[in-house]
Image (cartoon, rainbow, N blue to C red; front, side, top):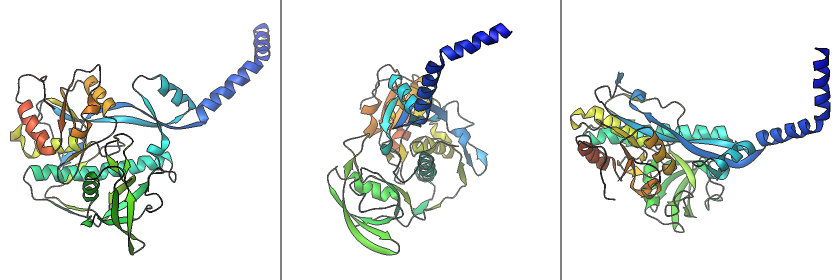
Length: 351
């Protein structure tokens, strides 16, 4: 035993320098931030277990299901960044694309969960409206939650500002603002009426291109509806856990429409989706679609519904799943009523 201990001590002494250098390298890789976010494929998750209507579970009467699809976002230290460089389906993106300079990564995740909660309400509203139920929504404007560091509006808008009008159109909920911005191109100027600390003033902001979709214009801000109020005839509860962002809206809406109108038989098949939903039932573009289509295919979904604006992003090599573009919840409903009654889950779709 004494001889073994001596040999071990000698080995440590002889390799002391290498051990110290190795420990320093590991510490640097693990603790030094890279300034990037690692984005990688996430999961395809059935949403019916997340939803209750008047305290009752939904989706139990169907052989199929509607699945939301996710991407994983992780703040990358140097070690994680090296892994991302080698992963065939992961991407390293600048931290500023996601996290505002005045917030940390946990605050970004919290903001993302707030977006999820608001998107759930929009999905419930759209689903009830499509099912013929009496619903209403009101709000007091689009409140600025964050301003991107690369936004041209950075010197004019700040967190807490409330946008009341855009292009002289009244802004009650965030969808109203998104609708106005969506009619513009990057480089256009947009006139806003803003409320700050009880005072109103007008500003003109230049729209930027979306980093994910260069053809889509953005102000470069994150917004939530100030004092949003929904009036629903039924109590709908959705628990998505720690999942954030608005892109599960279409999955929630379709599951609820199937519950409210079971005679339409929407979900007799395994359907994966991505896309935000607004109060007008429009399906909005989202990020990470190329990764999500791979996730949906791997999960065994028979079809993947994507926003029309993301259809090109979903053309990924090496997957067999059918990709169908939809611009509205109504289009998705019409497609699924035919698809769920068809004998084959794979067919050609014109786009």
